[in-house]
Length: 118
Image (cartoon, rainbow, N blue to C red; front, top):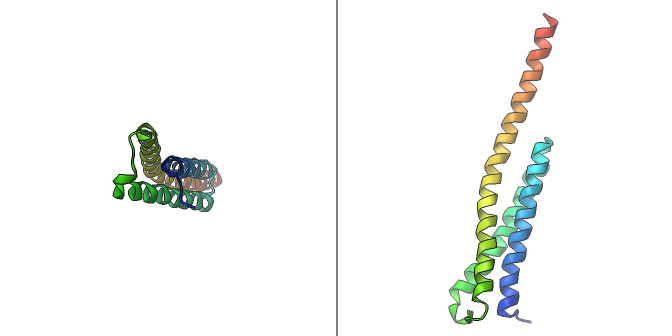
C-alpha cells in the first residue's frame, strides 16, 4: 500500500523526531560517562536521520507528487529534518567534548591522589 503525500511527509517528521530523541539520549549517556551507550544512541540517531533524508530526497525527485495543499506540511517536515541534522552534528561534537572532560577528570583525580601521598 502506497502512502499518501501527507503520510509520506509525516514519515519525515517521525524519523526526524526519532533522530532528535536519540541525539539527546546520547548527550545524557555521555554526561553520565556511558560513552559506548552514547555512541550507540548517536548511531541510531544517524540511522533515523538517514531514513528521513531518504524520504525527503525521494519526494524532491518526484516533484509531480507535491501538490499545493500540503506545501505547508512539507515545509514543516523539512524544518524538522534540518533541525535534526543540525542537532546531530552539534551533539556529535559535544560527545567528543564529554569524552575529553571525562578523560581530564580521571587524570586530575589520579594527580590529586599522587599529591596526597607525598
